[in-house]
Image (cartoon, rainbow, N blue to C red; front, side, top):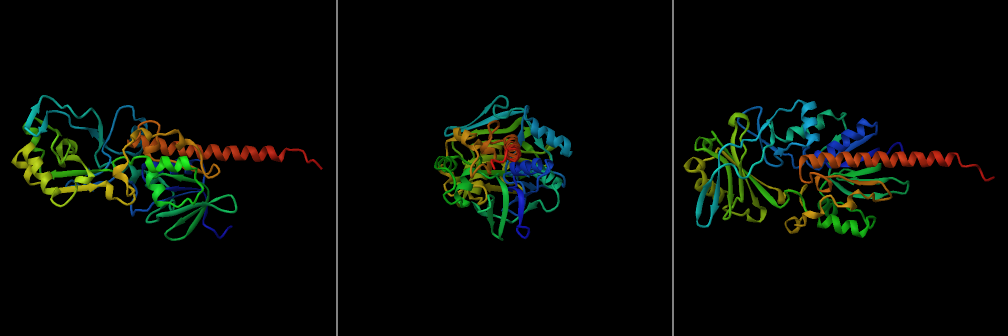
Length: 370
């Protein structure tokens, strides 16, 4: 087996959960590789460059909140600058009858943001891994048990083998894109196919402006809309308003020809003529991200499946472990949930290995019947 690309653990996916799992497994002394289909790490941690060289605009995850201690500890030890979400000002409500101004910020709660963008988390995690641990541009197409009691992981470039595999991608994506043969239990397959992908059915739109002009009008940059295309809007500006930006969420199904013009028209109705000329308008349609969302993502709506107990049950003879924010039992859908799920998967691997070692030790002490 020495000629085979063999490891203790293979982690599939280099988003926050996969990188957290790989970090914990490496720290425990296990030979671990992390395979990522994209040409970057981060998954739904995606930040676009902005006019300020040390700032960025988040096209995916944006905030973290009090009580999310894993994120807090990570940014502290990694030296990642954070700042408070802008809250001051009034809220706008857009209805079919017109727009109303409501006193105070009725949308945003106190939270923290990442000065260089949320992707700085994945950059820090990836940079701390040993050279060669992270393999980009390596999509996984199949995971199957082999004849030697390991798992064979097929990628676009060949085969790898490991004692354990951590699936750190959305379950519905894994169910559609990874061939497990008939090795997974039917109830687990049904669950994975039905579990929504966090942000998978939405488009996030970011309008970058020269200045946060809405603040001078006493507005928080916060808005509800019952007419769309953006259903809710928030201030995405960086520290001290630089870079200046507004962002909103829309159903992915509304992204069609003319969508960008409709968004700018809506922002202009709400925030005035200065909103009509953004420097850049970013449209991140997560439903079309092939390494995030399966084809049926817009039909997956039962968020009660997040953190389902089946995701904590080992599969493939105890060698397959689930991780991704959708499988988290707390803070599912948050960066905190992704980190928690990755750490849980790593503990699951270590527990399985310790159990196997204990069993082997017990068997060596069984008296010879002969």
